Length: 361
Image (cartoon, one colour):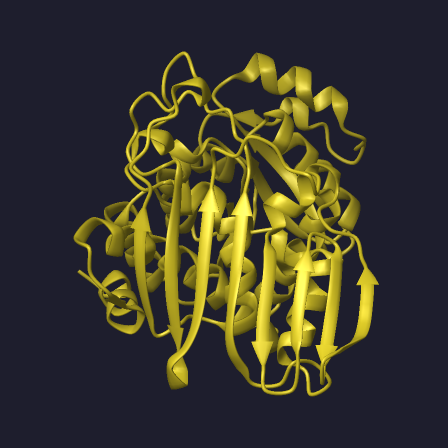
């Protein structure tokens, strides 16, 4: 297997099969088994991938545990329904597998605590939550300008606005849609994961969820999934505001702009403005850099590759990558803190909130 890491792939839907091909093409992981409850669908979708080293059609299992008993693996990638993520993460960790799960790993605090309890018992394992919007060229350039000496300097304030029209109609509501406040975990995550990547966790958050029902989008009276507004407080009382809506009617800037977010960030040495793939850096009242970069890739394929490589490096004990594992967990913590603040109508300390979530019980 050319020293690649053997892994179990969970999920065989179109999104998951696309990721299976991406992982195969990186040539750093080797799939040894597929896990999905629908064997017929899995068999059919495996015909779409280009892979001849192992006949995965003969290695389809219903559970991670069953697959692991039959085939040796060191890691697990989970691309299944978000309703099942928590249980799958727990099963993977209990099998002593390094675990990568696409967002959101948990639907609520109870699930998240259960996952982290398993992780804390096995501190040698990597647990990584996938967020791909932070890895495209435009996002990486924004992060660079926020943090580099040649960028904006020390941040003194900023904001991000996002709007995107999502049709959430279902014959039966998915669990992740009927949990209050899931707007943050299912849409705001795409923007706020970029904020975490650039600036880390803020000190405090004050948040409000939009109490609105949009029947033509299929909300079915689900509270708090239409949108939300927050203000984050970073050290030295530096404010950052976020406004997001799922019920947009149109978007003049195209798909990428509304999902990546529109950003204005002020610093002591300059300011930046970003709309999708266009970024402009201002200093002393003048535009000094104006660039158009690749924003979201089609189906987010190339945006997935950096995360896969980082997961590989984390398993290989590359200490420089640890911050990315922490950022992936911090993003879930921040999003849930937004929900918590909206529920209790209070300002939340991220330090205290995270400590409670990660505490062993």
